[in-house]
Amino acid sequence: MNDDHVSGVTRRGFMATGAAGAALAALGAGSTPQVMADTTSIEQANLKLVMDACESISSVNPDDFEPYLADDFVFQLIDNQPLVKGKDAFIGFMKQFFAPFERAEFIVHRTHVLGNLVINERTDNFFAKEGGQDQSFHVTGFCLVKKGKIVEWKDYSVPK
Image 1 (cartoon, rainbow, N blue to C red):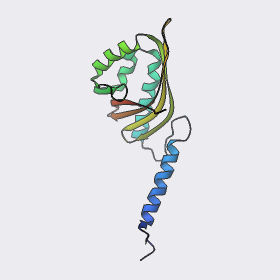
Image 2 (tube, rainbow, N blue to C red):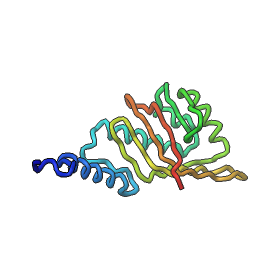
Image 3 (cartoon, rainbow, N blue to C red):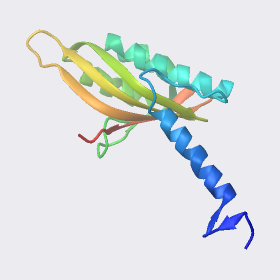
Image 4 (spheres, helix red, strand yellow):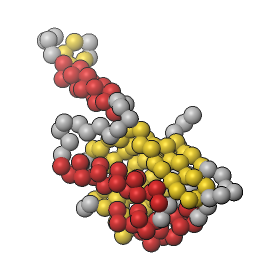
């Protein structure tokens, strides 16, 4: 038996596990997007695109969201909901969804970008028009970005 292999654990495996643990710890740090030192310029652009899209939601005007989306955009409001396929279908869907609200805000708690994937934990707040009821959702958003546009956006409920 050599020094590189003791009790079924290699030094390389041990070091990889430690590096993975450090990366996971970094995911939970802070309430603003954390960008790793080795984040590529493409990843930075993908992160900016998704963060700008989240910020554009405040107007509750789906047309303000449109420039961030690919024509073949796919959206899922929350897990187990049907997919909305196509940018035009999404804009129509959101016009109905936004109808009872005067404004909205997405509060991003954590964000991480890996290549074309941007994942964030958010609280989505929708403020009702007079006589309506405010809505708030705690979600994890998954966005796939290609060629400078969001091609897929799926939100998943955060367990309570």
